Image (cartoon, rainbow, N blue to C red; front, side, top):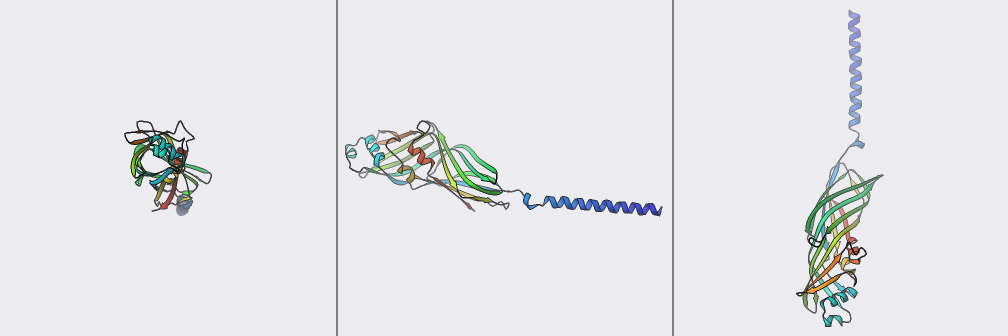
Amino acid sequence: MKKSFIQLCTTVTLVAALFTACSKQSSDETVDPAKQEGNATVNYQIQAVNPTGSIDGSGAERLGRIINDPSAASFPSLRFDLTWDSIKVRFRELKFAAKSGADEINMSIKTDRFIDILDSTSLGSIMLPVGNFDHVKVYFRAQGDKQKPAILMKGRITWQGNDIPVEVVIVGKIELTATGNDVAIGADGLSFDGKLKLDLNLVMSKLQIGDFTGTFTGGKIVLSIDADVDTNNRLKSALENSMSVEHKLR
């Protein structure tokens, strides 16, 4: 009887020791820091900068023909001052694309709403996983038709002290692209601000004689561009390459 009791105690002790060892191993596996997961929120905003500028060269020559002003047509070095008052964009998609090691990351927001990018406007938030991201690109897509254009720019040009209202209507698809610096996302969950800037000076400097058709009715200039038909349009190209991006910790 005494021998059986000793054997039972020995068996219980061995089982308890084995259970403790297994529990410790399982606990060690679940706290491996390399396997922790997390993410960070990137809050994106967009704003157009440099809303005043000028149009000269062949672009100014084309405008002079549209307004049909003989004095403009004969001016030796024609130049129009330009001020934008509103730039409404039919915002359809924002996409973050990058590489993290061998992985390619694509995160996006899809929507259908109008925003005025002359003011700093919120686009929404994108969640990024933990990782070090390089080859960072941010894409902003605007798309629309004649009823709801992709971009509607309203402003005025100044000629010999007089203001002439002007509208630029762009239909079709426009995809602006910006290349960003590397982004590192840790497991601490800190938020980032993603600031997109659209340089209007760069856009208008590319306005050339063959890039638009226009009318001058009721004292207002209306310029029309179909981005889907004229895929080599220089104004379209300037728009798509005029955006920059900066990611900053909050």
